[in-house]
Image (tube, rainbow, N blue to C red; front, top):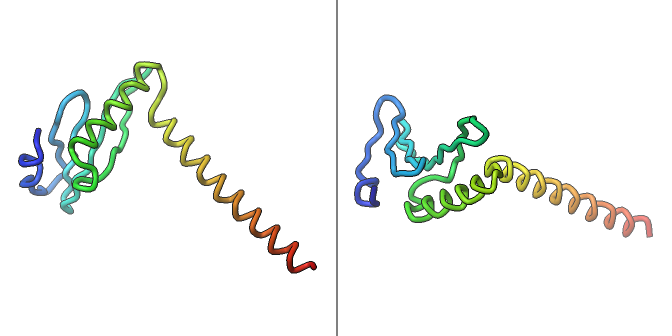
Length: 111
């Protein structure tokens, strides 16, 4: 697959896939969006990892993300669960930051 082959892909009535290799493919939806996905197996279960939207995530970027995910899979780690943990941690930090600011504001107003 190459960028020159991706650009002219047109949407159809139903979503369809354009495969690259090693589980990486581009999903073309009827609304015209093109999304990178990586299909992999871990512990005998098939899983799917979204890598981003084309052209914001280029073919080279998608391949790099796929390779990073494959290295995690080789260590028996699930890239999908790692991503979920990172998002939960970021959300918790955001809440924690809000709580600190609110506490400081209350302390200042009490003075």
